[in-house]
Length: 213
Image 1 (cartoon, rainbow, N blue to C red):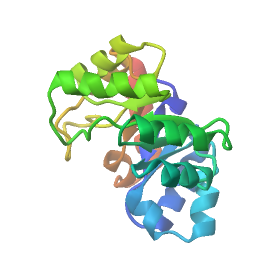
Image 2: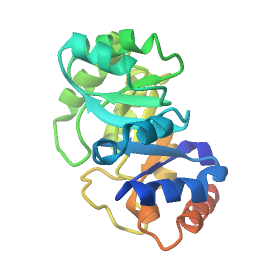
Image 3: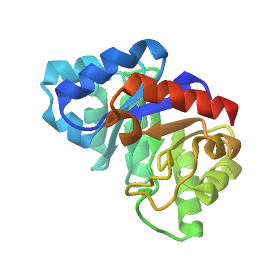
């Protein structure tokens, strides 16, 4: 695994997350801003983070197409932006993205903490790809392999990464090595890094361990 394939989920207070970024940004990793962090920051400060091309803005946007289109235009230039909803939501996000080139629209078929039938997951992924999504979020072996089989050229971002045996809230998990073996492009790791005593050391250990397999 390369450092740029690791997305560190930023958890906790904004000031702590900024400190984590400053401590580790030279390692080349990406960072995920979710709804909790997005909601607590000053607009200018959050915008400066979002405009970093290494940010995955994970807001799981879902609203009427006009609202989605306008919101995406105003969300800056993250590397990835997540949406939910249906094909109309995805198409609206893509239309909004035209003003922010370089941002990939990532569809979230379901949360990694929830269970849906495999055929329903595949139907949602197929619909997303047909609507023009650049990739999907998928966790666990079955979901990842299904998404890869539907279109191997799309991006797969995988949460639910098991580090040290702790699955947290996720029902569908993989180790980092397994994730890349099954075709994941990026993995998301949160608390094992953000709540460690030394985030930089935790990242380096994870990268070393993944490289060794």
